[in-house]
Image (cartoon, rainbow over all chains, first blue to last red; front, side, top):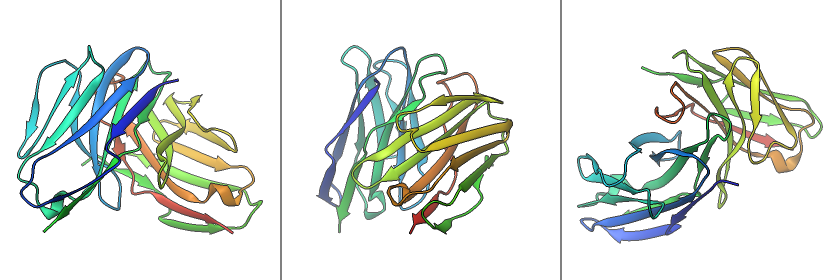
Length: 112
Length: 114
């Protein structure tokens, strides 16, 4: 059974701090890993990662994948209160018959 | 803009009722998914479909069925609703090739079974 594990489950930091969110996975026939941000509504897409070692960056957010060690990290620098959300990691596996599996998410709270 | 539309934002149904949750996407996507989201459990895959009339069970299919008669529409059916099916239901779709495009989500349906 495919497994995606995120850590920590929740995190409280102060505005301006840098945070690192973790996602490890055990899946058959890995295709890609995705990060989403969810704020009381539908998840919104952040990144898709398919190759090891190549950092994806968007403003203060960045992410990288390690396919050897089977994990990804999502970094947020200079955090703002608007970054408060649940961050979801998901993995596509298989040839179409294994689905898109999500982790339980990391609930990030940024305090002013 | 990609749009995934779920027919209802909020639903209240009685135990034993048959419930239909509808999802429509306008991007000609092959893949469509139904998840339920519960506190502490995250998003769990109920069913998904990678083609018309094709369906695959996800992690928690018990008590649910699905229908994909047309490419743009994926319906989740609760044959006999029970209180433990009270949850947020999210539909998503993604295009080909498998695993190389993001999944787009609908706004969710919050179902309460009383």
